[in-house]
Length: 74
Image 1: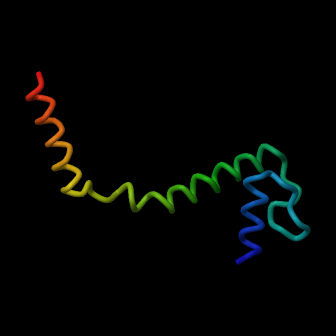
Image 2: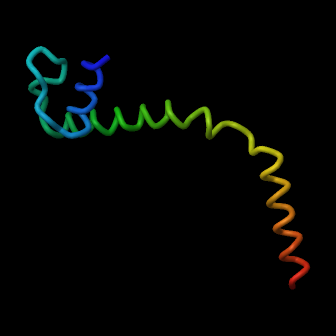
Image 3: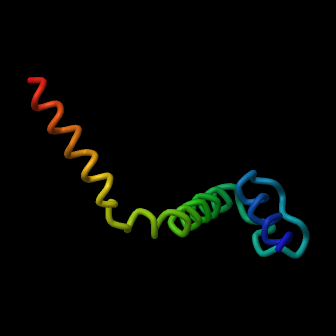
């Protein structure tokens, strides 16, 4: 697992890769694109499920209560 973390760290920080790693020798633009793709993939994995979840009813109730309170002030 440490090797994967080292590879991801190298991608994100644009460090030169250790010999034998798949991205060794790529041009900076390809490395930059690979970094962006890696970040996008990881963000989707981390937040995709959460973003797809419905809003909890208690939050909807709270928002409705706030709206009702604002209407009474007007």
